[in-house]
Length: 286
Image (tube, rainbow, N blue to C red; front, top):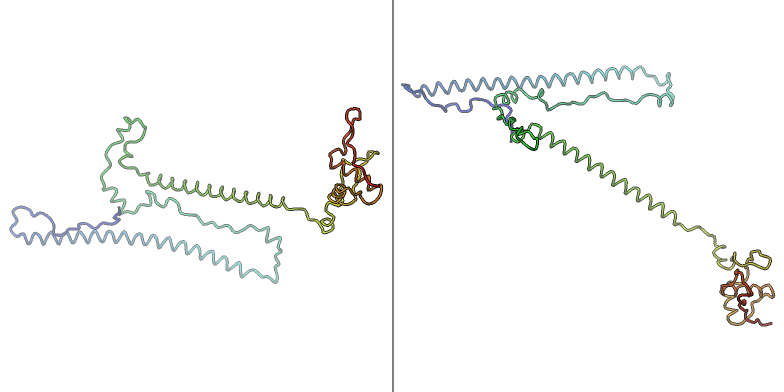
């Protein structure tokens, strides 16, 4: 609903009842119309005075702000003319030690308050009817609410604005938490991907492959670990399955027997001869 700030009265110039017993009605209507015009001009001059008064206040405030800004510009111009870079040298440390510029501009508060209400609006408010005395019914309510607020509530729009601001703040807080969680998930994924990187190997290590393996469970009669350096296990197993002795003489013969025992699952185990017999090895060709 629009609020009329200034209202010129009377609005109807010729509308009105004529008194009883008037001889010339036309003359009476003319006199009433002229008097209504004079009243309208008076109301218009009053509103004009109020408008020019507000313009004067705004212009005065603007002049004060412009004068303050001009004083600051003049002081700054004097300081700039006094500086001489060829004589006075300022080190980088001195520049860092100086305090940063901080503005002293104060923000306007209580813009919409009872003291800032324009005079025409204040007059309309004073002319309006007072609300009915519903506050006397508040003692009979069970919800402990004021009965007058169901008829008129001046703090309604403020509470509505406060709820909107709180909701916006909560939405921004949730958005920040969501972005922070997404950032942590991305960082964790990157760390896991870095951990999955395979260790680099050179071509010599890849070429050797499984040809040189160390079997910790392969123990000789002296109790020392034996390092297998013969042919690959797959080739040795194929030779033994085909009935061909491994090449290389006695040492390879012993390694072949050890390889067969490794494949049979008996290598490195402690055998008790009085309980079970050891698994015989297949005969080898001379």
